[in-house]
Image (cartoon, rainbow, N blue to C red; front, side, top):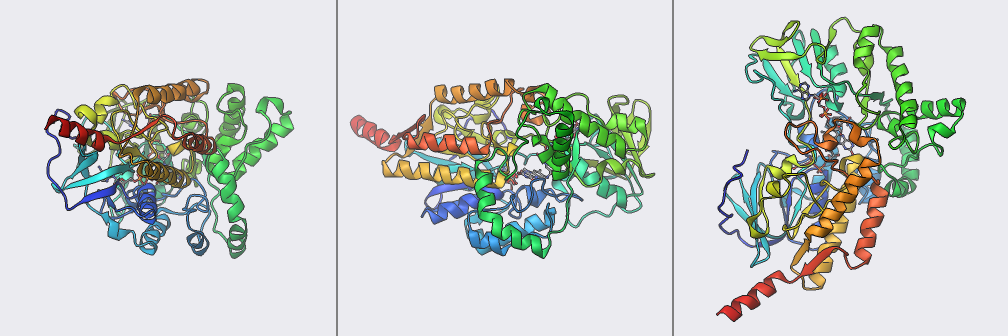
Length: 557
Ligand code: FAD
Ligand code: NAP
C-alpha cells in the first residue's frame, strides 16, 4: 500500500507534455489510446501488467469466460474489425477474448503508445501549469494536460484477512492472478474459497481435473446456466446481417445488449404467462435472467417469483437436498448481487470428488501449513485457490497517490465513499477523468460498449475545452454531491441496498457502505450525458487556469 502520509509532490520532468495520459490498458484504456490518437492527441498509456487486456490478461483461471455474449462484449467502433473477427462460441473463453484484444492492439498499432510493466504510483496536479505530473514505479515522471484513468473496476484482488492466510505450505492461487503456464491440478487435493462469479465458473472445471475439490462457501450466490454453444457458420452470417441493428438496440438499452424485459410486471401476469416469461429468461441464459421482468429490482414480489423459479431449478439439479439447501441464497433478492453465469455449477456438487463446506455453519478458524481448519473439521490440501473478489470500483484509484488542488489526496476525498459527477470527475481534481468509475453504469452494463461511449464523450469534452482555450476542466463539490446523492436516492428505491454486495463496498472490511453505481442503465446514462454536452457541458467548469496563473505571476513581478 502506498503511504498516504506522503507529503512531497511529484517532481521531475519528462521529454514533453502529453495531451493525454491513459492509465491502464484494458478494454477501456486501449480504446482511449486509439480514439485519442484518431483525434490528433499526443497520447501515452501506462500499464502495470506485462501485456494488454486488463481483466482478460490477469483472470486466466480455468473456466473463465465473459457473461455478456461475445458478439456484444466486443468493440463496435470499427465496422471492419467487427465483421472480420469471428467469435467461436456464444460466450468466449478468456484465451479467445485475450487474443481478440491482442489482435485489436496489433491491428490499430496501439502498442507503440503503451508502456507495459509500468505502474502509476502517484499523480500531482500542477495548478500553475495546468498539467498532471504522473510518477511511475520506475521513477519516471510524465507530464500530461489530461489524465484518462482506466485502471479498472475489478482490477485489485481481495486477499481475505483469514487468520494464517500466509501459512499454507502448498500452492496458493488467486483466480484473478492465475499463473501461466497453468498449474497442473491432476491428482491434487484442491480447496477453493469463494463462490462468486469467478468461483462458480472455475469450480466445475477444477472438479474435473483435481483428485478432490473442497468448496468453502461463506455466502451462496444465484447462478444461471450460460447455455454456451459454438457459433455456426449460419450464426456468423446472421450476426453480420443483424449487427448494425443489434448495436443500435444495445446502445439504448439498460445493460448494453439488445435484450428487453417481458412487457409486464410478474404480478400482472397470470401464472402461465409468468412461468413462460421466466422459462424464456432462464433459457436466454446467464445474467439476462435478471432482466426477466421490468420491475424485478424494485418490486420484491416480482423478484420473489424469479427467485422461487431459480430455487426450483437448483433443487432439480442438486441430488442431495441438504447440499441444495446450502447452495440456495437466502440473504439477498436475486440479482442484487451479480447473477453468476455457469456451465455445470450445480451439477458439480453431485460428483463424488466434490464437497461443499458451508462456512456459515462451520466457519474457518484458521489456515495452517497443511490446509484449512474449520470449527468442526480439518481439510488437508495440496492447493488452495482464492476466488475472493476485488476491492471493486475504487480500489485501483485509491491505491495511487493522486493529489488534486491544494494537495488533497483522492483517497482522503473519498474517505466516506466516492463522490463524482457522472462518474467522470471528482471535485478538486481538474483534467482527471475516470472511465467506468463510481457513479457511472460501469459493471452494470456491457463494459466494452460503455467504455466506448465514455471515451468518445470525454474526448468531445476535451475538444470543447480546447476550442474555448480552456486548459482546466473541473467540477464543483455541489454538482458532484448532487449527482452522488441522486444515485444513492435512486438506489434506495430499489432492492440493491438489501445485499451485502461489492456494489455497496460490503466485501471489503472498513469500506464505506454506499451504492456506487448509476442504476438508470447505459442508454439513459448516455442520453443524459449527451444532454449535458448539448447544454454547454452543464456542471463542468471550463476555464483557463494557466492563463490566470500567468497573469497573477506577471502582476506579482
Ligand atoms: P481492466 O480490464 O480492469 O483494466 C485496467 C488495467 O489498468 C489493468 O490492466 C491494470 O493492470 C491497469 N492498472 C490498474 N492500476 C494501475 C496503475 N496504478 N498503473 C498502471 N496500470 C494500472 N464485464 C462485462 O461487461 N461482461 C463480462 O462478461 C465480464 N466478465 C468479467 C469476468 C471477470 C473474470 C472479471 C474480473 C470481470 C468481468 N467483467 C465483465 C468486468 C470487466 O472488468 C470489464 O468488462 C472490462 O474488462 C474492464 O475493462 P477496463 O479497461 O475498464 O479495466
Ligand atoms: P465476488 O463476487 O466478490 O465473490 C467473492 C467470493 O469470495 C464470495 O463468495 C465471498 O463470500 C468470498 N469471500 C471473500 N472473502 C471471504 C472470506 N474471508 N472468507 C470466505 N469467503 C470469502 O468476486 P468474483 O467472483 O471475482 O466476481 C467479481 C465480479 O467480477 C463479478 O460480480 C462480475 O461482475 C465479474 N466477473 C464476471 C465473470 C463472468 O462470468 N464473466 C466471472 C468472474 C467475475 P461473501 O459473499 O460471503 O463475501
